[in-house]
Each structure stands twice: as C-alpha cells, then as structure tokens.
Figure 1 (cartoon, rainbow, N blue to C red):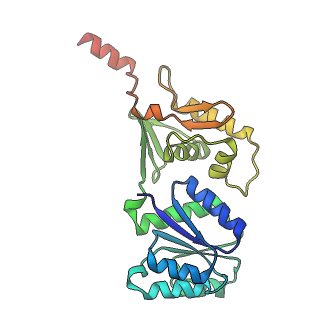
Figure 2: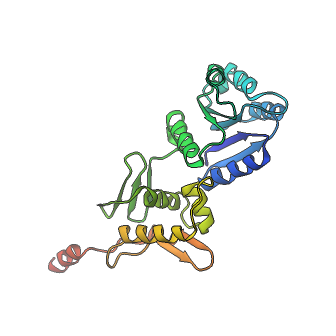
Figure 3: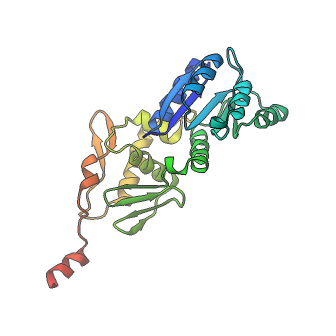
Length: 247
C-alpha cells in the first residue's frame, strides 16, 4: 500500500501545490483545510505522516498536535509543522507540544520532500525503500550509488534525482514541466530545455553500446521510464558472449 500523508493547510494554493508534489513522489495524499475537521478525521484513520499548518480555522495546529500526542494510537505519528512563524520561541513551542520537525514558509519543495523521506525512514522504515530497481539498474538512495548489470555508474546530483524520479513511477510519462517541479522544485526557475540537456547526460551515463535505453521519449508529451525495460533481459556483455561461445 502507498504511504498515506495528510496535509492540514487552509491556504488553498499551497494545499494544491503540496498535493501535486507529494503525489508525484508516489504518496497517497489527503488535504484538509479546517482544524476541527482534521481533529475528527485523524481520530477515524491515522496516516503515516502529518503535515500540519500552525494557523488554521477552528483548532490550531499546535492544539491538534498536542491532542494527537495524548492519544496512545497517535503518540508516535510523525508530525511536520508548516508555519510562517520563524521566531525561536515559536519553534520551541511547536516542538514542545510534540512536533518532530518544523519548516518555515516559504520553503524549498525539494528540501521538504527530503525531510519527509527522512522522517518516514526513521518512523516507518518499511514504508520507504532505500533501494530502487528497474530491469538491470539498481539505485541506492542512502549511498547515492547506481549500478547497471553490476557496474557502477557515475551520476551528477541532478541526473541521480532524475533517475530516482523515473524509477519511483515506472511507465508514467512526465512532461518537462512536471520534471522541473519534481526534480528542481517549483521555487526555482529553470528553462524547460534544461530538462532535455540533463536527460541527454543521464542517457549517456547509463547506456553503453548495445544496451537498451530505459528512458522513453514520448513525442509531444515528455519522458518516461519504459515499462517494457523493467522485464527486459540484460544485454549480454562481449565477455559473456565469448564465454558462451567457447563453452
């Protein structure tokens, strides 16, 4: 089952942005805009992680956090608070009522996603695999290592994140705009042609002669990790061909 994240945020535009980016990461997302409604729904079903705004209509985020920590079934629920309050006293207050982490608006979306992954890794390690695989490609999120057919592949940070992004949703076609949002973040302006440049670098790094290209270009739509590549047999190396012939 997908990791379920509940976002309690009354700012509609931010709620839409968070849903978009979290779903792009493969999470199941529910957005609630009212503190009283959030209090009721969190009693009915507990998520894997809670993104909680400080200032809300009805119950405040601080009060919701305090109540959650008083209930045995939610006392260990990972809670990340979102707020415009940046003063030290307010951060201390948020953490003192039980929040696990604290992000001040405006924030970097890639940084927020990294914090969420770190929190899930600590609280629910079974929910967030550190190893991704597709066909003969293996990616390790913790060590930032990539291997194809056993050989190590050197990737830059952006190419690594691109490959990780594709491997999280194999077969799904992403437009250049979606790749910019998911890999670079919405708060950073990058020309869409930059995506093509980094896709080219990624292909050059992971593909050798006779190896199948796992990145599929969909004309007029974008790019995808080819779902047919997932079950494709690895192309034999020259050494293995010679070995088989001599045998």
